[in-house]
Length: 279
Ligand code: SF4
Image (cartoon, rainbow, N blue to C red):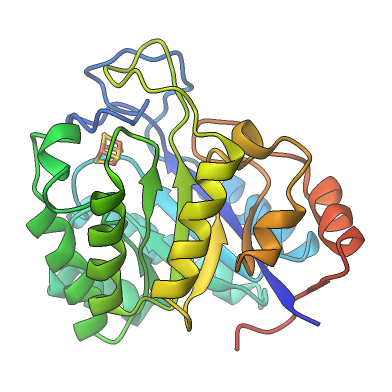
């Protein structure tokens, strides 16, 4: 029986990003109706980490909005990681703070961060249509930097932003060259504030994307993330049959997810068990 890995997200800072990613409600350019705050108090982060571990999550991803992993973020995420590890929580800690140099990533690793999440998002050719403030190359290099300093790599993308099937194949080929241990699969969620005006993908098209991802990345943990509820509602069994073996548990960065209890019951109802080890 396949074990399903659960990962919780902690949105450490939200909104006010000066980048212009056309799919992202955290960009200050679009004025989307989201909660905005700078750095969450450490005690709140710790509470979320305890809750994630209680709910059965093995992964805990500390996410900050913004372009890059600057000194301030390095310091804060390192401090948060140390505090979480001090509690002896059985969590694999993941950093996610945008474009990052090897030096900054090394510091996170020394503080106890085990992996870095940085999504390629889409193909190299399509990328300029969804972002003008940074490049695909910068994203790819950050992923390489994470691998070079010995961090685990979590990198995936978003489907349904108007990209062609060839773009999808190109994204998956690029991910193949990085061989991430985890690959988040997101589906674009429309929002009236965003410049991107695509409809949500049909279930059939979304499943084809998952099948392709599994074919291209047979050894990666394929994690279903944002947009899952919008595309599939409560009818998610097929996702697991098509190769999904990891799930984002609870809320996403700016959108609500199902409750962890509902999620775990659903997965068990499909006949899968919850992973109890990161291996
Ligand atoms: S850099 Fe990150 S937080 Fe900023 S707009 Fe792009 S995806 Fe959103």
